[in-house]
Length: 347
Image (cartoon, rainbow, N blue to C red; front, side, top):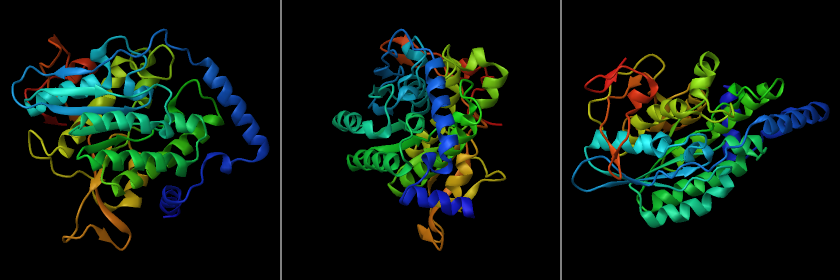
């Protein structure tokens, strides 16, 4: 309960950052942060452009806008088809059986305060659905939680204002990143989860939905770092982005109101919650979707906004036959090496 109140306060008022550390510890953490940044290699080229039409289907197209930082841009991969926007665009085209126009406005290195120009460009495209991946740079640059959240809320509201549905992949757990050493790793995990939970509260209140990326790549990184992360040991590899995209795609489809099959029955740990409680739970469990819900026809209860908590990682993605500008794109099932059922499967 104390944790829930703390995160709710962060979302509304602020806090976080180095407030948890004393002066001596702060100096150590700042020194470690510099060392970690210096140890992360720079890519030789910018991320490949993923803009284009995905899916060999006829009919009206759906426009997907991608905004955020390097994780949204696909930093660390070399082919457009390996970027998260291409993977989700291809997967969405397969689910909807219609072409999907992908427009990626993400900028490597962006913090939440840098979303405004991306939003302005996205608004002109009038997207049907927008995906935002942001937060990691806010943590590494020690941006205060209320400042980061305020900019994110402005982005969500602007996109909702032009009729776009919005899904936010919340701040990843930087405590899983190998170049970050203790004690900075412990603080990075705390700050990341606090920001992710605060993002969830603010985004849902603003009319969007969230998916916790958390430590989605953590176990896989420990087991197969050369496969799941790129050469810099910080950004995902093609397989890493495919895993993240597989967690995001079901929510993107659901938010659009398009699901190929009825949702499975709820599992243990899923269901309706008050928003602050759901935000804390989601921040600690990767792949968890948080979206608005009603109870007895009401959106709010004694503890605040009602939301639905659902974990999507257990779902495998059926293989697609999408295309970008006429070129085939491998499905997410093929990218992450999962078995390839003929329909969406619930493990």
